[in-house]
Image 1: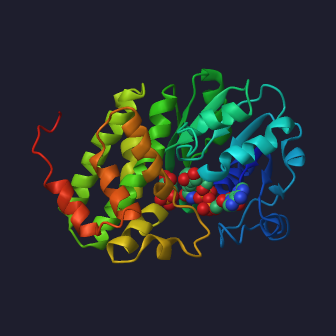
Image 2: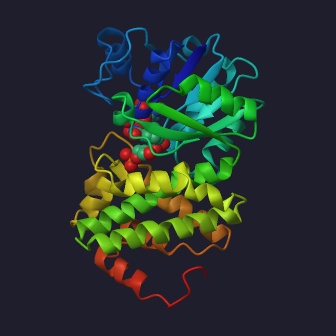
Length: 330
Ligand SMILES: NC(=O)c1ccc[n+]([C@@H]2O[C@H](COP(=O)([O-])OP(=O)(O)OC[C@H]3O[C@@H](n4cnc5c(N)ncnc54)[C@H](O)[C@@H]3O)[C@@H](O)[C@H]2O)c1
Ligand SMILES: O=P(O)(O)OC[C@H](O)CO
């Protein structure tokens, strides 16, 4: 198949490389000219996935029309804060009716939409697939075993994505619960920041397990309110990605939390950081989304207080522990 991948950060590059290795003809759109040059000349993305040799047939370009010409499938992997403008820039070049796969994890700041809705709003009348699950780009690029989920209301589009990506090291499950899969991928990033903060404060393994488990409870609560299947949160895009990101040392979100727990301010942590830690923005959008729907999300609120309301991290954790006592499944 001819496939376009829009966004050449670590994840877009790893997906494009995987698709090339699967014998597809892949064009990767990169925002930065030096990334285009690095991929085309050195078969390496030196800025966002350095040290990983890429498939020699993988080609990159900064021109949307060149990348999307004749594409039968397109992946969108730009960070959430620029996804709308990137999708809008692609809209008139996307061949009619092809499935669009959205691998970005986040919530739209402007309208609190899911990432598939952002792409569908900018590029209407295409089947849409959400791709999510526990998948560090570096591990995928190094062919380490990974399992993820392709979710769509259109089963043919989900299966096409599944077939296009699957290898002996990369297993893709289909799903129909787009809302659950997307919210799982977005909200786990906030929990990873929370767990990083607790670990930075050296609060111990009990605290980490409590944050992961109660984090899952509040992710599920919001998801169910928005129409998701609660079972999705026990799957790869929920529990799977939550455990990976809260415990894996490759996580950028966890590492932001760690630095904050050790005493750094958010602006110091983000200064000069070129890679994206979606959990920072998602803390703010998830808080607004939960308030809009009257859903209690105490861990999201605690992270918000630490990141944006100058509350010392240790106080925020104490405040979490001393809330009104309640039943576990309330
Ligand atoms: N890295 C991973 O392991 C991984 C895995 C799964 C999902 N994701 C998700 O994929 C999405 C992309 O993350 P990433 O890790 O590939 O990115 P990254 O942090 O490696 O790189 C940053 C990206 O932002 C792009 N960018 C910055 N400013 C831009 C602008 N003004 N316009 C267009 N693009 C701009 C850069 O070109 C680059 O592609 C995120 O939502 C992330 O949560 C990442
Ligand atoms: O490095 P992080 O924290 O952005 O996590 C990357 C992926 O979302 C893990 O599935």
